[in-house]
Amino acid sequence: MGKQNAIIAPSILSANFATLGQECDEVLKAGADWIHFDVMDNHYVPNLTIGPLICEALRNHGITAPIDVHLMVKPVDRIIPDFAKAGASMITIHAEATEHLDRSIDLIRSHGCQAGVVLNVTTPLTYLDHILDKIDMILLMSVNPGFANQAFIPAALDKARRVRKLIDNSGHNIRLEMDGGIKPSNIRDCYDAGVDTFVMGSAIFNTDNYKAVIESSRKALL
Ligand code: DX5
Ligand code: ZN
Image 1 (cartoon, protein in one colour):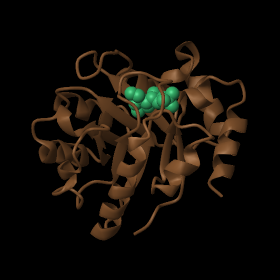
Image 2: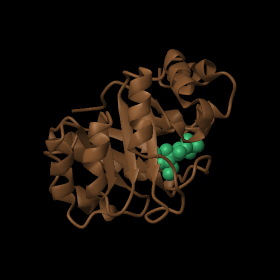
Image 3: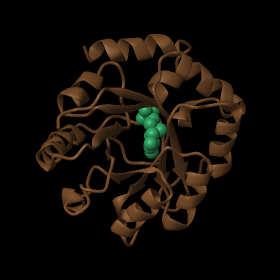
Image 4: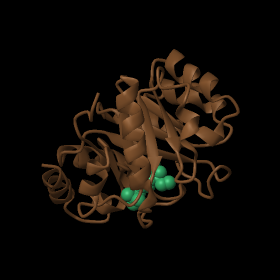
């Protein structure tokens, strides 16, 4: 299969929440492809962020780009339909955050969204063994989930190389996304390890020139 076209998905966790609609407009105008939407429940991860109301508000504000909803929520099934109704394009769930991973994937798909599975740095790849035919994306964490602006964990690169092989051998069209600590200076390493979908939070939103960061990230992939 090989890598799909490169996607840059800014994580709005590091945006200014008081002006979130404008922040999304600006980052998309600056060349971003998707909006990465981090949902934390203060249970599965030790932080609390945003829910379906905010996703719906962004759609009502006029955001038409794909919204990539990353659920760091346990249990997760109850909230999946709410995000589908709120305008999520794809919904990714942590393998350990559901008792029945196959059922949760079916639930996402039955609501018309693309489905993704997230593996933490220490989550075994065997979780993927029997679901490759029904997922659109695998998200590898390159930090421990819960906070923006953490340091990239290099072990994620070896994991990406292994998952890239799994995807290619499966013959399925599955994106490989990485999330956490990605910057223009290490995005190429992720790409070379097989990643095609890049979440970037603080690297973009903690600067005052979103376009410059996105452009230098894309340049690093050429
Ligand atoms: C971490 C979140 C990430 C994070 C990315 O739990 O899932 O999306 O906000 O932020 P940076 O790019 O700053 O690591
Ligand atoms: Zn995320």
